[in-house]
Image 1 (cartoon, helix red, strand yellow):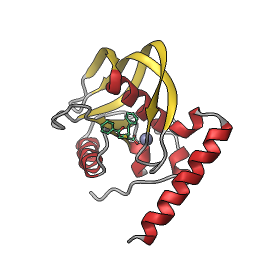
Image 2: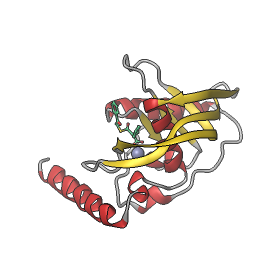
Image 3: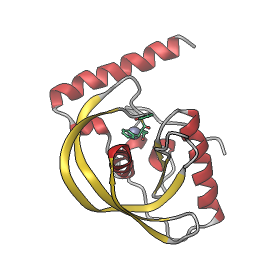
Length: 170
Ligand code: K1U
Ligand code: ZN
């Protein structure tokens, strides 16, 4: 399955993903293809909306070994504790980085690739940031929406410049 990474300002990044009713072989194949795409793009996460798939799932691997990728289906944050601000980037917004306020610790409920309900209690650090970032994508939201309008303007110009320069370089 060949997946294409959508980049800002593609309006398809604003779509809202629809809950998965049954975990089928097709959903598992989509998850596997997304894991391959995430590694190819050097990301720690990737949401379905970023590759124009409307099923509600994301993949993530925040391990140092890069061998612990998982598929998170119908993910939901059920608890969010403390706020903090840390730098973020996004595969769909290349060349742009900004400090974003997020919860420091989150609990995530999701369905795994076998169709079993799972819970990760009190995730923190990169994993917590990643979960919140990917769920935003599933709701059509980008990290640049979470900064001031002034900073947003700067980031949008940086993304457009980065894309223009990288297309020219090909
Ligand atoms: O969804 C995406 O665009 C992928 C994005 C997810 C993300 C996770 C955590 C914070 C912000 C964004 C990325 O993978 S960006 C790459 C990245 O943040 C990273 C890569 C290697 C080590 C640490 C972070
Ligand atoms: Zn992103």
